[in-house]
Image (cartoon, rainbow over all chains, first blue to last red; front, side, top):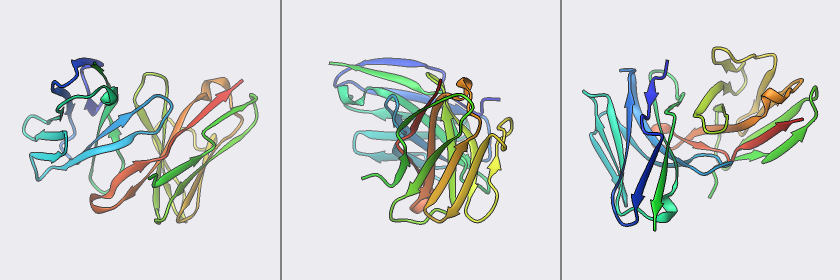
Length: 112
Length: 115
């Protein structure tokens, strides 16, 4: 049972344009969501997070939007840069533990 | 800089031997650490929650006798893959929560190849 889903396995965007990565979840107990960036054979790097009490969190070029009623969150990167090319994972947690449940990842390719 | 460090970064071992991977929290104490594994082009799958001073909590389907976890101090958790087989070859990653909201930070990962 995939509780966190990223339905787009890959995304290609031109440099300078906006990248939008989507994530859906099914577990209503999730109350904290995170986005990670990952290069091959490296550990994930934390990007940005959002609590369920908010619907938007912004940090530089990265903005995460949360739609609780739709159980959907998205990561916006603007402007996109070639160095942003990586696999992006969304993750969710909630309840009594800090266990993170990851989505399947979206490979972002930013074309120069 | 890194807040969670793993060692070794990569290891090759013979089938049937055991391999230990260390996960250290740098400059902070972690009563809880998490171990994940990732197969190529797949998501990160939580294997177990490592609890300082008590037994680890394993996810369904993860063999606790095969993947031994020891969290002997507040800054160190170890994962030992016992009697490793080629199908255990994978990328193993540890993590620990830190800071407001307990944001979880990951180690660099350890690539295990069993031949």
